[in-house]
Image: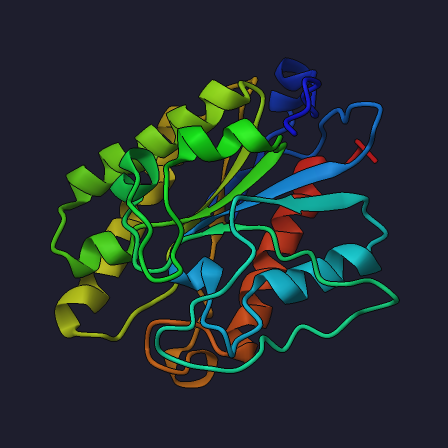
Length: 265
């Protein structure tokens, strides 16, 4: 059941003065956690977030890093499964330090950013509904957003994707006006030269979205998932991360979470 108390009831205006630049993005060094001190983390995206059934997903190494850092946290989302249309098996997600992997997420295989807002009917294990419906069933403090790849696959323009990412941010804030939003640049894709260039082009636009949408109450923080991601060594198909790529993505998310919540734990 959805809690009535929002976390990160904050002193964002004071914290905003502490924003500083690292790489592509702006990071918030301090926040205020609610008395429960449990960080509710929403992983929002497409197949790169959901992952195929025989992959761990970046969420698993991120989960381990958060445990190692002794952070009290809870992954949230309407989904707790991975895609089994193209592969079979069991996700390599063994117990760690006596804990069972928290499978909750909001990754939707093949979905575009617009689908996250509008929704889809049940579709081969990719979920159904839309963001406004999902967040009625859980609270979140921080959203990890990696979207746009499928939009580029389907020839959407940068302007279209920009509008959709803004809509996602607006929808997140409608549920939690004080949400921290970690907005990722997309990992590379080698599906075609057009798509490769499209990802690079859109990634140049994403920091501007963060700058425009950033507020004192609800910061939008860029997480650079593009730089240093090598498709030859970090991907198994030129689109999705392998174990090495999942680890790289998890580290980028973890570093951003650490910085965004520093001083609140």
